[in-house]
Length: 334
Image (tube, rainbow, N blue to C red; front, side, top):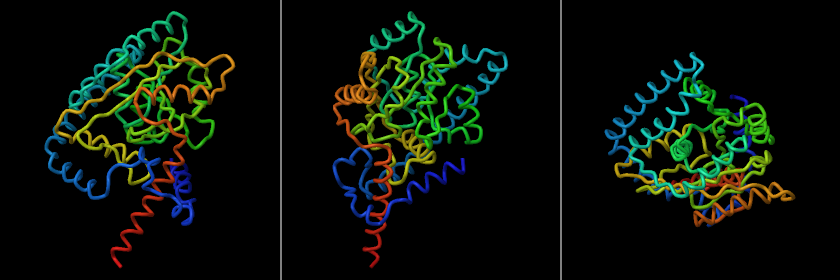
């Protein structure tokens, strides 16, 4: 874990002042990384403080649910029935989480999910579910929409979190080492090689990180090298105010802050999920071409641009923006 953090820090610090100065942080192409202007973010913090009682109640209920869910998970794991438990408890638990958080779900294209899952079972092959990535709530929404437990592919850093990491392993999350170029490829191939074809669907976000939903990042072709048919799910969040944090490099702490911010919104939030028809790579189709074809179909469904920007471009933007804000602050002080 410490080694991964050091590698990430080195990645952030590698940019020179000249490189950061060359980045136009106000350029439209970075809009999917941006949240709000600095003053508006302070307004959101004020909202968080005012809604603190509501947040505490919601957090208390969710913690109680989480502990109950985990307790019975350990019991069923000891009995060797963990898969049976997850198959029925996971969709119900995710539904209750969304209800407590005040989130409404709108699902479109259920027939496409049914068609894909029925075909996969008939052909005795695994299922790969993908979506754009907006927040840490995405896996819960996907599981609820599928009516089934899923195996989310998550960054290995999460496994090092006390208690939560152990529970993530127990509940079947699959870790990927993002510091390795072949991390995603190896993870997916090994999963499909070692797992039973009738196991829970594997869930991956090909963008590799979260955005604010205003665009889609370049899909990584490694997700599609397994040549398994994919079920594309398009996520769109509609909330009273922005629930993303983009002032700093994405981190686990910001993921938690994001969840707290969602819980603090008093009004009902709505998350729309649109399931597209299952897609499979053509016989002679290049893997990156297929990845782009899937991404473009999702972007068209969401009515957002599909860009050539990547996770690395996001890191550059976050670093350049911190540099820009620090420079602006220095000017005001002078």
